[in-house]
Image (tube, rainbow, N blue to C red; front, side, top):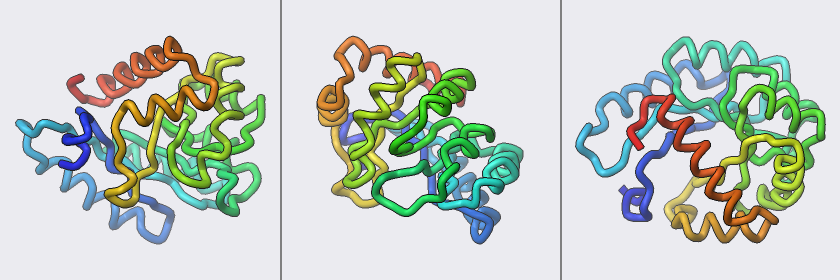
Length: 197
């Protein structure tokens, strides 16, 4: 309910998964979202974040998650804040994901791949991960890839308002007009995933 009080209408719960826990996490998330009250002020979608995988594991795990009913698949990108295997961004983009989170120093080739596949690239407010925001935003706008504003929330203090997220976008060279386009694209995406917004 903290998200609802911050003004959000829809969220996706995207717990970190890999081969060690995906078979336990997916049923738990699906059970939670299926039992979420329909009259709640906030809608909750089932998601996962494929995190710190060897690159060749993205495709089979994304396929497994989709088959089990996961609506939103995020991949942990090559963040400047953590040691991530080189080639992670590309492998993730070649799999069936919806969002590449904190992609760091993403290449032009991978931005074009994200554009061609309609995969969102995240502009995040999270400490450390956000160091790559300006680069990601600049290339995405140059090549026409879709952006999404995210918080990568792990704790209650990570939950911020939309206006704070917008300020973060503007700080990273994204215009107010472009923010409106981002919101439109994200709403369309959420509708395709079954949200009413």
